[in-house]
Image 1: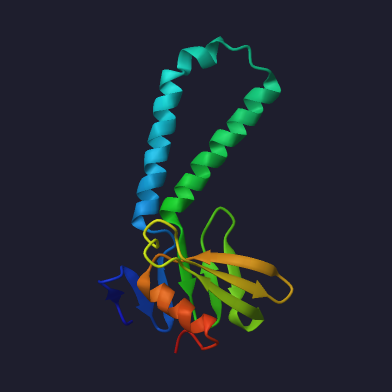
Image 2 (image 1 turned 180 degrees about the vertical axis):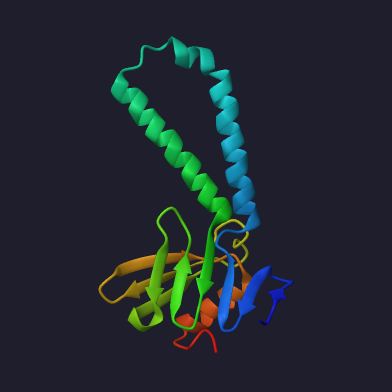
Length: 155
């Protein structure tokens, strides 16, 4: 085991690089948005109760509320991993692609704004379409950069 990379909080073990999918500020902004939604809901509580909601409207609002909570949870918990054979990201629906199936890789990062807009790799995989993997960790970004230049990201 190579151990923990203290500077990036990423894990580099035996040819595997793993790290957070979203930067800390994105997580903080998502948390602030959730708090703002809770405050707004509390303030509008009496008005919301006064409305005569149909069963369909209540069902729709319930599904929307659950999806907001699930997405928030996964913004906080999502991790991206690159192994010598695969790229994976945990999410509501986990994503995975074998490096052998990758036809095209494009690294999308906005210099100076990576603290706000999570850098990502857009992968076109044979028979799977397009997948997007986010990376907020420096070690992951380096591996993605090597991969996007046609190299092997890990040894």
